[in-house]
Image (cartoon, rainbow, N blue to C red; front, side, top):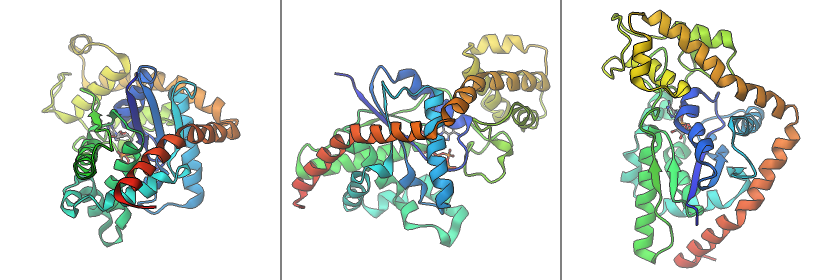
Length: 327
Ligand code: AQP
């Protein structure tokens, strides 16, 4: 029996190389090793205000990008969260088993609500309950995510354990899988902040659909420091971040990369990195253009994905309802 993997991505903003290196690329690489389920989490997206037309278009765009990156619908299941109502239903039930103190500890909520102040929605506070529902509905073993989602997977484990201890074995307890390198790609213009799709100023974010000129301009402007030597040194976050991106796109060992830039400066690294990223994204961009020439095909793959996976979600939800005396 293969282990089951579940992970999701929000159709908000523009998908960037942080999402790609920290999550999507790993989903593609291991999809056949596991029983893989990937979800475009549009219910999570509405925790912040969205234009309905843009949300719909972004949902298809993200699905297209996942397919273009190599998610194979014959191997993995790809679907849209709102197409399976069990996600929202289980999230409500889990809410009733999550003490508010656990939610208050979530750093992502603290960071995001800081920016939105009083406009922040209750949904954003409750985001981790919905994420727990996503994961637990499918008896997930492994959740491959970037560093920022680790705390949410821990909360998922906690609520599953709490529920199981009250009602008996109901949920499988999932494990987060965080990569050793690339779990937190930083913004190019501020390497103390993670690269993020909701940043309004896009200078720090390389989006998967950026043109070669945009990629070159952003990398050449990346914030570094006043030193010269090109070394993997976490104490120099700007240059370290650029080197990690180089390492992940080329697959070269760190010593080889350092030797390559021996006696050269930051500008040389930036110039080469820009070409490496442009080349690394080119096949994905070409496949994306082909795929989106037929949007109905993407929509039909998403419908098929949801139809295939819905019985698993409904079975889990029925069991949960039976355990707690609903229905
Ligand atoms: N900077 C990052 N480095 C490595 N991994 C990252 N991920 C996000 N940012 C980085 C991982 O990408 C997957 C999908 O992310 P998401 O759609 O759930 O969005 P997010 O985690 O909230 O991150 P974003 O892209 O910054 O979006 P906004 O700005 O909307 O919050 C996840 O596995 C995530 O860990």
